[in-house]
Image 1 (tube, one colour):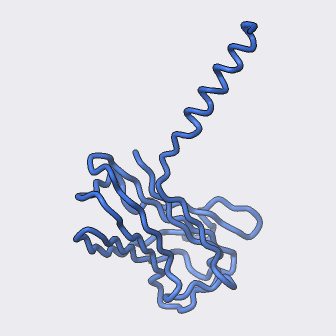
Image 2 (tube, helix red, strand yellow):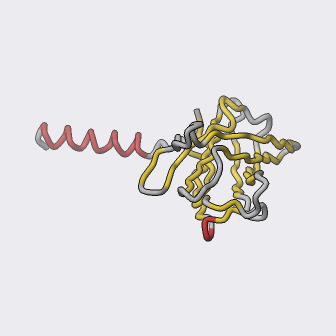
Image 3 (cartoon, rainbow, N blue to C red):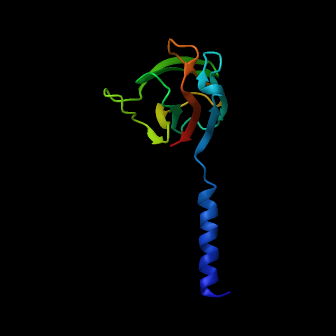
Length: 154
């Protein structure tokens, strides 16, 4: 085997090893039918936590259209499992006071990735349910195209 082939093979093995080291435990994205997010259509996922020493980051992913009428969004996070039953309300700012959207834009879609839990330790190993529901006055909430959850190991 030539030196060049050996180096290429070595680099491919390294790429494979590091490429497979995925720190995302959960990465969901759900299309909101008719861009109308209702209370009843919360986003849910289940994750199995094995390492209680590990720290985790939980993110809420959002995409909305220019039809969204507000400068903010309220959601409620429900975290359940192994004796834990925690609900927390969050407010996210989506636009500046002058109406300019803060998210990354592409056409009439704007994308956000909001932190919900940072440096979080699960007290016990086992299965946990993560649920996020919209908590605005409008039902349905018009202009929401996609919502998602990402749970990442630190």
